[in-house]
Length: 435
Image (cartoon, rainbow, N blue to C red; front, side, top):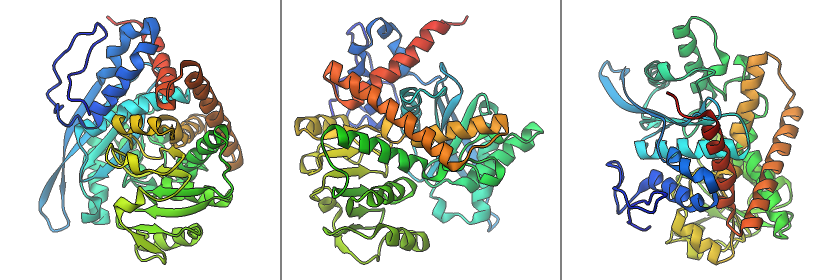
């Protein structure tokens, strides 16, 4: 990554913000590079581009809780609202020991882009707590969630900012957040979060939505490059909700999932892994470690001979170091920000198509939007209706982005940013500045 300072639209260098290191820009620095790459395609809207480089609001909170042994522990929490020009903030909350402000800022910005790319009426937001949830009991996790929700209570709400599940959070965590917000507001507010249990206003189809979106976008991208899904060899990094569901759907479509990596181990079988059996095994053990297959190193995983690679873990996984080793024809980003800008350039030079995160994993937020709409109307759709709507929106969004990429001779990532950033900045320009 270049260590040069960012450049504004007048071509002048300006100092890096204090939270960035010139030698390692981190997730936020990667996002800023992506914005710089799209700026030349924004036309007259480029005068507003600095809007995209500054979060509207960033909140850092202390989250103290009493542990089961009676001691008091303090955790650092974040909620960042990147842009609210097109609607209320929308984005998940992750519990992870490596959460940083730079990461949450970048994730909130990518949510702005993602929501605009599929044209749902949301801005971008994201939250997190720096904690390893595996070290907490169920009761401690509930106390942590409720205290965090109370701390960010003043900036969230059904028409202000709507959290959702992310890494290490789930429907139960969303139920605690909804209940805490409702208790503080004095009335039940089901629309304050999405990804809730069905019994509390959650949506059918939400659990599989992100993985399903990866499959839909991947299928469209494969068709456009003449790659047949049936018989295609697929490698999946991450076997959580996104990776496992995507692997299952590709498996059901006739593809061979030849390699899977989770936080513990990388497994390989050139004849194809038994995905349903692996999902069953992982549901009980919490890992694929021990499942019957050849164990390979994490370095070997990136060298697996495959047609489709799906990074569905954390950001920054495909780098300048391993991008030259990737054998796939198509990379579908199930995770947020898994590919660095340098790796993007390498993959493009090697004629490997990348379906970027801001469209490929937008299935989750699309069905979250459906959930939010259903909560407001108190009228719920069938799972078939939800899946049909999801497929239609994802296909239309991808096809529009593909056309922009062809017209401008740019990557799909740049095309997605052109579409999304134009929509965001058009809204900003039409709203004007107040006061």
